[in-house]
Amino acid sequence: GDAVDAYIVSTGGDAGMIELLRHRWGLDQSALTRLANYLWALLHLDLGQSITFSRPIRDVILERLPNTLLLMGSATALSFGLGSALGIYAGARPGSFRDRLLSIGSLALYAVPGFWLGLVLIIVFAVDLRWLPIGGIESIASGKTGLDRAADIARHLVLPVSALGFIYLALYLRMMRAGMAEVWRQDFVLAARAKGLSRRRIVLAHVARNALLPLVTMLGLQSAQMLGGSVVIESVFSVPGLGRLAQEAVAARDTPLLLGIILVSAVLVIAINLLVDIAYAFLDPRVGASEAGA
Image 1 (tube, helix red, strand yellow):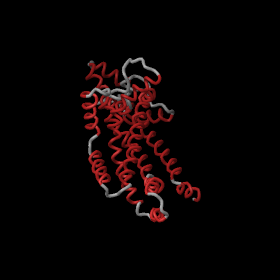
Image 2 (cartoon, helix red, strand yellow):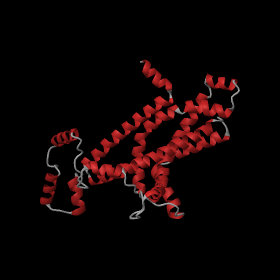
Image 3 (cartoon, rainbow, N blue to C red):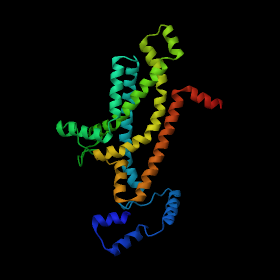
Image 4 (tube, helix red, strand yellow):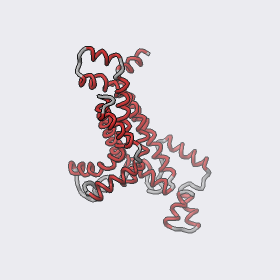
């Protein structure tokens, strides 16, 4: 069925209403005609009208996009920052007890489904302990402004950010640990040891710095998966972002809205990968030098 079928199921209506809605929403046209009209509107940067919200799709997406960016940005900072730090801690002494413990723990954490982890966090910290809100992005009609509102949003984001970030934290931890294990065998590390440098300096200035570069590349590659994971997390925690909006569009069979979300998501992933490439050139001067020489 289409959007009219979903609308009639929820509200009811006769055959005349169905015919009127199909004509109003352009669903009585052929698929080729609708595709041509959509592409023509897209050339004019017009994403069309949302069938569900009866509003321009651009406005609906821009209303939800900041919440998704905030969730993704916070989860990325948590997973990349803490994951790389724990990876450095584990890889500083390969084969040690802490290395094996963190490796096994990260493997177990990576195997946990995001929605299951989210539900467990809700039960423990929101239902049983009542330390944090169950869901949403902020308290409804709280009237808070400034720092009070920022603190309220931060409290609401703790659980969804943890559920989304911990999965990728395990990935970055394992990658950082594996990268450091590889760098330890390089000649320049042996040279640093021969110079009498302290182990701490060797780890931070030589081993960790070079092992960090593959993680930066993975940061861009994982952006698409994290955006997809936000669909589940936003649904579990009722965060009004693009992920939950996509779920609503699918349920209502709002094809124009869903196409707009996919298009914006693709542009977002491309932009993130572009920023990662720029950051990589700054972190590894050899990349910029090779491109300049070419």
